[in-house]
Image (cartoon, rainbow, N blue to C red; front, top):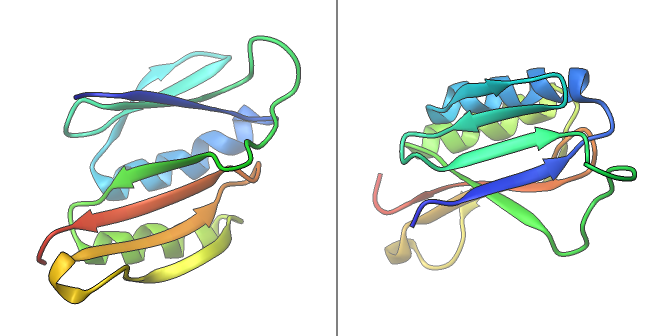
Length: 125
């Protein structure tokens, strides 16, 4: 099942370079580039949008989290490091989540607006 998800931002000009850098590492590319929204499409066809809300101000959802699929554990590490370099905050460093045999490797961070994200590689390296 392909999914599209969207987060709101208070400053799209600031958010776009943040997501451009992450998209490059996970193999996604910007496919929508409008004044009010930027859209990224990953290798599976799933899309992520970041933009100004249709009404009101952007705010962080309590319990809301997006997940980006990474092609490798090294990409998980790289996305997390890059997000922090660009001003994001750490919500959980890269590492295995659960037993080794599950092979679920992930990291958590927040973007410049405080939206929570995870980047993960499922399966053996």
